Length: 316
Image 1 (cartoon, rainbow, N blue to C red):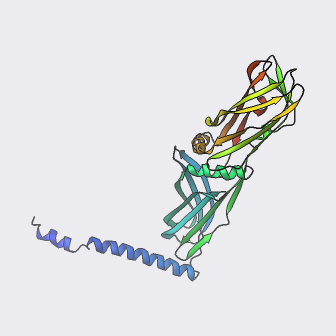
Image 2: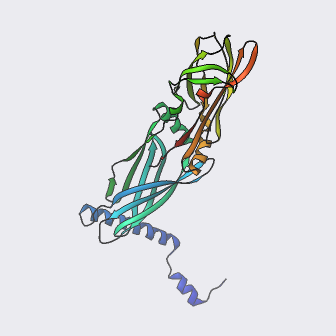
Image 3: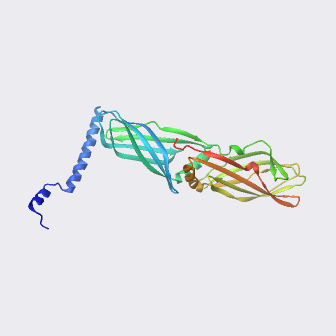
């Protein structure tokens, strides 16, 4: 289509799109070079990261958002154009939860608030859980912030916070506890201890041991021990195992089952845990099928039962 001569003349004076792109790239390069020179010569002071605060955002079955706010101080009386980057890494016991960076940031004089969001894979929580159990239920959150740009590179000291839990506290006791039904006491649990075995990505073993004294005038055989363990409503173990321990009248014997908790389900627990303000309940219940005097009965093992509140503050 033929254009009028005035229109063609106006279009001919415009730079080609490629020329515009090259000009923008060159301009940004010159700005970066200029900032580098000004910082190197002391005309501009280095910006510093004063603090980084993070909180949990939306949690789905696959990921959890980490919402971060960084305070960066530009001590100069003039602004710095969009050539600065802020990066931070958040780790729990060396398990990297997120490694995030926001670049192309411009800084006004004084304090600047920079907000950015990163998605954490929920599988990271399952990996952390193994280290937490194997570390006597102790963890350390480490946040490593850095601000960088032309002529600027500064890291803050690592920000750390400690996380401790004691999930099995209510199960360890030397206090005698009756074991039986509402109308008959079969045993006295003279002492009970519960501790974690060596956790793997697949399981966290719960090693249980109780000394039982037979309070009946006949031998009692423990045929089977059944159990149910859940956290935040997510079942980690539900099953039974043969026992076969026989304890004579007035005598004592040991029952020592090991319950393997399914670590692959910890990412499911995590979603409800975050949505509930990092608060959950660990529930443990157990029963024994026994034979005494020719009769078979199922009795609750109250010394193995607990409802323990689990509270964390992983981001500090």
